[in-house]
Length: 129
Ligand SMILES: *[C@@H]1O[C@H](CO)[C@@H](O)[C@H](O)[C@H]1NC(C)=O
Image 1: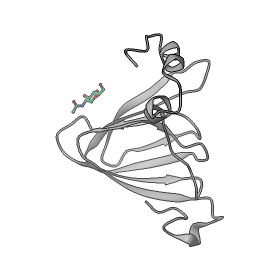
Image 2: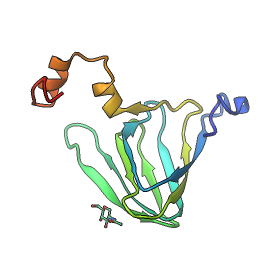
Image 3: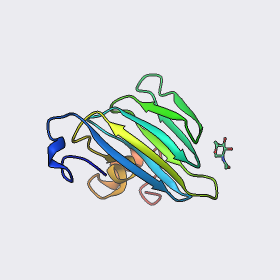
């Protein structure tokens, strides 16, 4: 990761960068509250997607291969699934030196929200939560 924490000279420049070395695994649904993101696949392939905002909540997703680029509008939920067997490498640029990271799973389940509220949100019961 290269943001203003690692490279103070990026402060106020409105950009951050990250190299992602992705083992076969899921980079779970998350969003960056303060940045749009573009990413370039350097090696391998990944199933990548984002979901548009309310009221459509439409999934835009496809398998990206070496040389492909994707763009995520600011604040939209996105994910990256290396569902193959080989590692993948991506280079991503974000439009803020402090893009922020919100992992939906953590937001729902890391303890801040009461179980009954999460259960109602997910149309399930507290035992399942
Ligand atoms: C990964 O998942 C996507 C979406 O379901 C699918 O199109 C693609 O073929 C999968 N890739 C592998 C390597 O299984």
